[in-house]
Image (cartoon, rainbow, N blue to C red; front, side, top):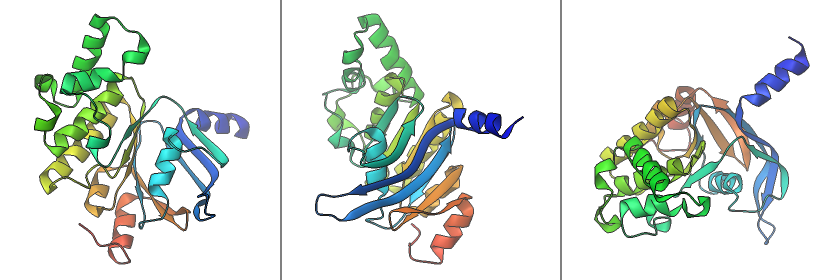
Length: 235
């Protein structure tokens, strides 16, 4: 295989390709500074760093929630975004209605919508809660409804911005295990922002953001040990 063919083959396997991305607030403050990273299809990766390092900004750029300024941002398929606080994205009164809400733009038949909703809720183990009011859910269940909404829209890439920040310890583990299972069973790609070093036990690779760029990446356990002995406190 030629170098060109090998490069093209590797590119075909990329789910996320970020090259030399910079982002500045109108005040002139630099958030991202020539940030680069790549994620293969079917990987579960985590993004680490201190507050203000640019983690959430990078996710929002990938999701199209912020305008790209410089550099290259590529996603190989539809992207679903899960916010830190699920109450910021769940808009309908019941579980089933909320998952169906994102399908309105697709002009599907009632039967097709019902099938997608049931499939998505089954994938996150909430099939029996379709009629449950959103307000009656736990925080972890709300986050799974948000993930189900992305699955129902056939998103191939999940971006999760500290999705366990507001959850109790048991719900934190339940959610990260759920995402890990979805990546393995459905071939999804996931990029998960976290401050919780215990969550590194569930991902394939990790990235450390410092000064608006990736300063280290690779084995999650190596980064976990590095950060345990440096400036981040393990949870």
